[in-house]
Length: 178
Image (tube, rainbow, N blue to C red):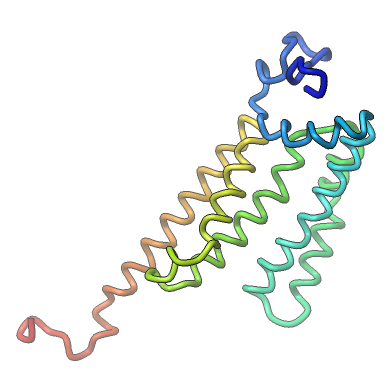
């Protein structure tokens, strides 16, 4: 892509990478690859991206767990063997999905903490949407996880709406008062 040929793939049957895998998010790596034209650039960026996934994982755990547990959860993420295995050999576009999805989940949880009237007034929802879009652009099957993040959001907002209609919260409300 740095030389105007698109995402060329000479390892598989299809010449254009986008003909085999839908990964338009890889185009975000092109400006850096123009400066550092080496496969090591891709491996270093992949390693940094996976390591940065610990930050939203820590923030997400901090919203839900007390004490030092968020730090333990972030350390467990960094020590997870499958994460190392994905990073150990070759370049994989799906590895960028992990930190982007973690950031999206963090911003979704943060956005859900706002009252419904305030949700439209802050950028947290837009940040969640942006990270979800970037995560979906990393590989064609990543959209399934993004879809289930939408299902999670739908269920969580539906639960909060039904809690507002819970008659136990309004003990003085009865049919005679309506």
